[in-house]
View 1: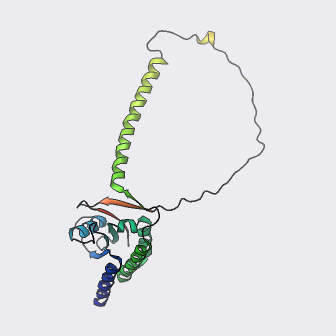
View 2: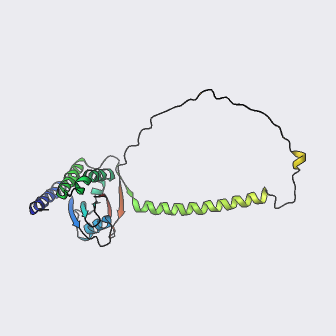
View 3: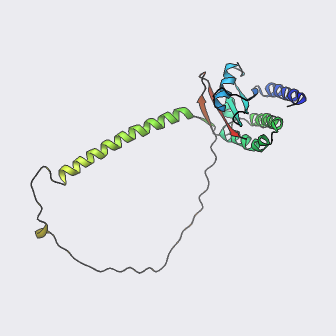
Length: 227
């Protein structure tokens, strides 16, 4: 970016912070030190003392030139304001400009869109979903369910083997004396078909904010894309 564009962004960021009482950080890098864009963005925000208020509220916009990715990291009350749907809208609207190298335009757009969402406040029924905790719980549930299923299958097999195969006794069922066979004929004629259709409405989009813990122990939200 040119010097004029950098000065313009600095002014826009200062206005954003003063108007919205939220921090805004822009970072571009060509080396993420082996971290994912999410990890790099979270750590940069936490380790450099950014954020306003006790909850360090604010957001960081990262352009990762090494992996050709961009990412938004949210902290504090910005997690609820920029929920997953709103971040996805910003990312989707920015992707083409990112591919074309219009980084200055993208940053200005992220500032403007985020400021608008701050003005609107958190979306209705906004809730946070701890992404890491959900994964751990799911894995534990799968392990427990697998063990229980294997145990049930073994128990059922033993029960069937010992009772229906009569391994505990020498009794023999008199097949020839007690069995009978009746042959009948049955015909079915197809007359017509009935097809019923109904409209299944799409569920409303989730207003949740996926969260995760950064390496510093701070909770973050966010999302990103590739270019």
